[in-house]
Amino acid sequence: MSGRAVFSYENRTMLILGLAFGWAFFDRLSLGFLAPFLEEDLHLNNTKLGMLASALALTWAISGFGVASLADYFRRRKILLVTSVMLFSVCSATSGLATSFLMLLMARLLLGLVAGPVLPLSQSIMAAESSDHRRGFNMGVVQNFFSSILGDFAAPLILVAIAAAYGWRTALYIAAIPSLIVAVLIAFFIREPKDKIIGGANSARWSASVKSLLGYRNIWVCAVISCLMVSSLLIQLTFLPIYLVRSQGLTPAHMSYVMSALGISSVLSSILVPALSDRFGRRPTMALFAFVGVLSPGAAIFLAAPLSLLLPAVAIGFLVTGCFPLFMATIPSETVPSHFVATALGLIIGLGNLIGGFGAPTAAGMAGDVFGTSAPLWIAAALLFGAGLASFLLRETAPRIVGRMPPSQISAA
Image (cartoon, rainbow, N blue to C red; front, top):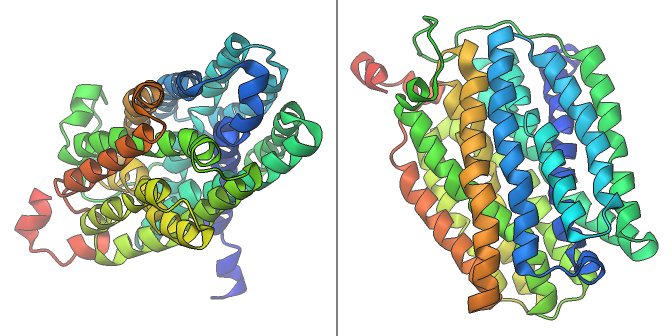
């Protein structure tokens, strides 16, 4: 690859947008990793931990869909993205000011409100700036690569180390700084994208109502998968750290190693899974890795010791995270008219966070308090299995695969 290709606008866009969502995800996951430090100070139990995750997911869903719809209507994705990134940096620090559960709950509601638009806006820009043969790869990097490095791998190591040395409040204050830098990068190096036709969707302009979007089979199937997979991921990220410490006897340091191993797996999956979908198709890739994902909660329940068995088993299961950019971004962007991509992405991400993210963590926390600490992980495994079954309902959209179909099958797809 030539130097000019390496430093192309497409690659620069992918890098900056990936950093934007990576830091948003870092902030979103922070309370889960800091739970062992928070629970005594703010008197938290499983139900309250679930409520904190659900509160953020609720406002994340509402603002994600609402702002994405405004971005499509006014054709102003860049300025809305810069504003969202700057605001969630400021709001992230407010969590460190909380002196009670109620104050922390309000802080997370506010954070979700300003951070929700970051992913649909970033992915709609990336879809417009991507080459056809790289769309799955680019959108996978934006959504998973940096979020995995920063949110899954670096966050548990950095936050736990800072909290152990200086307290959990300081950890949250420091975590808010990098997002301001990313906002400046977006403002200076990302341009407002021009709409172009993606996939075979009809380009005629129409009102992008929820009913209209759900008329596309892939959109409602992706919405169902989003509800299932977002639920499973947030349940695991909320309750796995505290489960490993409380029930399996790991120290906070050993717990951080396990969670960082998940981050390494997510980094690999962000490249592997979308690239495989570009070559072999979206549908088979989605189904395969959804079923592989069941291994992660199962291993946490049955293979707590030794770490030499737990780490690789849970890491393999977390390869499922590579599916998220497929059903949240790539498949929808190849299904609907390009000028309503942000709205479609906001709908799928919003429903996943509203139904899956808002309801699931609280329900799983209640189940953990009633039926035992492993109950949330059993629920997470069942949700992933359901997502694997739902993936078979998808219609193929990968350009490489659709291009091989006879014209009649392309039209049907």
